[in-house]
Length: 232
Image (spheres, one colour):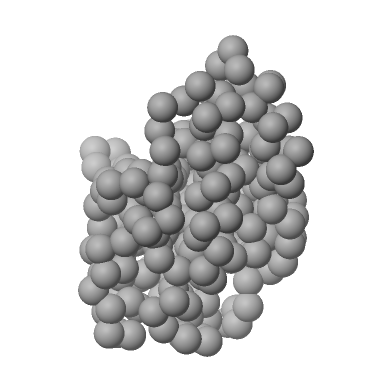
């Protein structure tokens, strides 16, 4: 059982997720689960944004402020990554009995439900849905007391006639909201993007609960779920 997330640079963490996806696709392991926490900080965004006219200028502005820009393979919007966040990566092939329809929604449910269960157990008001003013907002945010705590994304590949998914969550563990939001708004302004996000739309787990064993408890919940996919 994992008690602490693995510390690594943001660049190394993004690579570790892709390596985990490749290993499951290759049949080297039945599923993958990784918790990692950045040892540095960066602004991570989908590759499509690199095609914007002001991207290079905005990236330099961000880097000069201490937030280098890195590109990821999943979609969404700019996401700040720092030691205040913990990343959760699930990699699995759904049971063949499920079929393909609803695969995306089911993937998000498998990522989000254990986090919601933990928050409810701690005494929080957990929900899934959009939050006005949140960075990289989406229908599958995990929210605590009406504020965004976890952002989510997915990427799927076909391997041996079956889909294999990387389902990712970025959990705000410690309160560094003001600096994180400033990094996003700085890039968006320099890149000519209209979106501005607000610190008060977010909450960190440790703002509400000490929860020293939160990662270990999530590790157990996810492993139980992933093991249920295995034959026998």
